[in-house]
Image 1 (cartoon, rainbow, N blue to C red):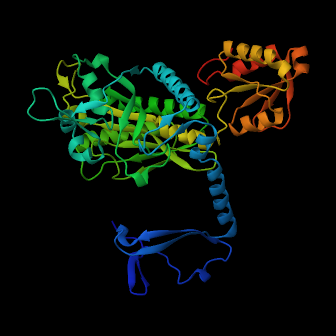
Image 2: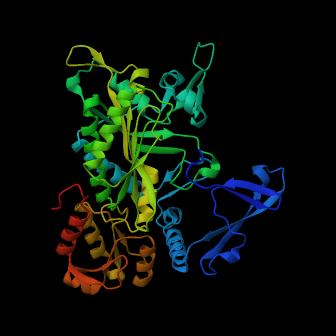
Length: 486
């Protein structure tokens, strides 16, 4: 839609013309000489057709002044250093390959981060009253037709055809692109009462969505991923409280993971929607009231809600100021109707529950990519895949090195020994590139004193600690933020 309160301009360049908001410049000489920069060039086929002529596309950026340009270039340089694909190789976390496009091969180090994050989320959800479930990955098309996804989302689904024994036609299934229809199937088993609500069902659900090859980007956009997904079945009167509880949980989790700032966007009813205006009024008011209990700093996006209900989107800000949309909370009045979800109310009659779709991390793959870039690979100690390396300075110290590693492992710390016949400076450099948070160097002096020389990632100085003290100290640091330290 063209805004009615903005002037529009026609732009001509030779015989080519365009209608757009502008403003436009006649030539780059009208820009401050030190406030724009050409970034790169690339080939592009006319209208994306490889049978047509190839054009040259020039990319550039322009700002109001030199300082803004410098800040942007610094941010790009910092982002390149933090690229999770580069750090993923250096830290041996994961890889992707042509034989499985958009599917992640997790290495032991990367899978350690994944499992630590999953265990943390599982504990937080359990404390918040969620019940964990697991649903199938391959589901018959009949369910997707009933839910409406077959018509609206089939082009993004991976289809699986099976020759059933004795059947005249192939049975058509699909890998699930989302978990919600399956969660309704769990809810529908057995009669539900209003006393059972709210019912919070959570799943670390494996999903697959077809993404074009050009849109995939490391862990940030993949075809196979796992959501920290959950659905809350509740009454209309419970929406506001459940929304407020969710925002509180999301805020706490983001803070634990190092993100202190996030923005909230409330998307309201679109023109094409299901449900009465009365229900939409109630749902939108419930979401807005819940947000206001946390912050008045939120944005309303009129008409951008889902066809089945309004939603909240949560954008967190990372260490270099980039925004990432991860969390979401959506009120759905449609799917419970389509899939026959009911509960018996206090009046003895059957009613439809409201289904609240919610996620905090979004997908584990993408969120781990965000974590890697936010911390530039220097993960919090409890999340670091390799927490401690105990390195020998001389080979005579090897037995004590192994003793220290055993003590650390008994305390639940991920520790490993490096007794290679290499100089200690070489070992320190190598493990620093691998982003190991703590390196303990041991020579004959440490063996005699039963101590260790401690060097932390990013620091040049070393400190000497007794074995007992360093084990106690690192044990405290290795405790996840939701668990008490000893």
